[in-house]
Length: 136
Image 1 (tube, rainbow, N blue to C red):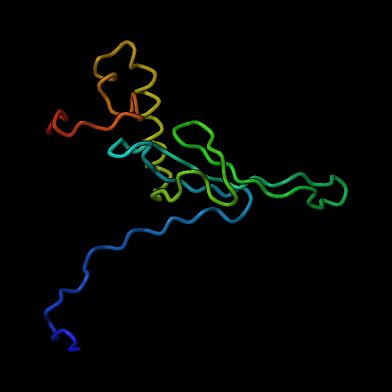
Image 2: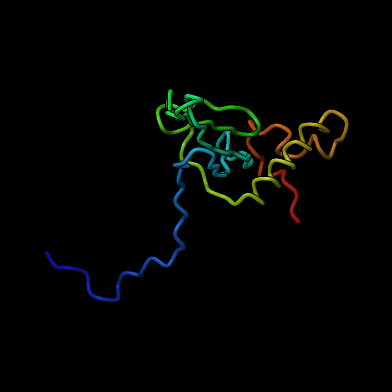
């Protein structure tokens, strides 16, 4: 069997997606974005490690570390060492706080404002209708 001639295949020049890494130390928090449904809006997510109980005299660890995950402001169960719905896309803290602020705004004002009710984050479990989405 012959190998393909040099130059016939294009090299993969697409940028690599960042690798999502979970926190490894107590007190460390990592920020992510994920979708609750296919073609839904991105919602904020965070994962952190909580230190276990310690003996007050010797400071010896009495219980294991615990992983705490939160998606769209609600706690998510962690099965083993990965939260449900993993993997998520890593983001920085500024983008996380913007997503969180925007989703809280949409949830708060969806009942009184038509603009907020039409926002995809008002109901993140509903897929975005790309045909009806406004073009900016």
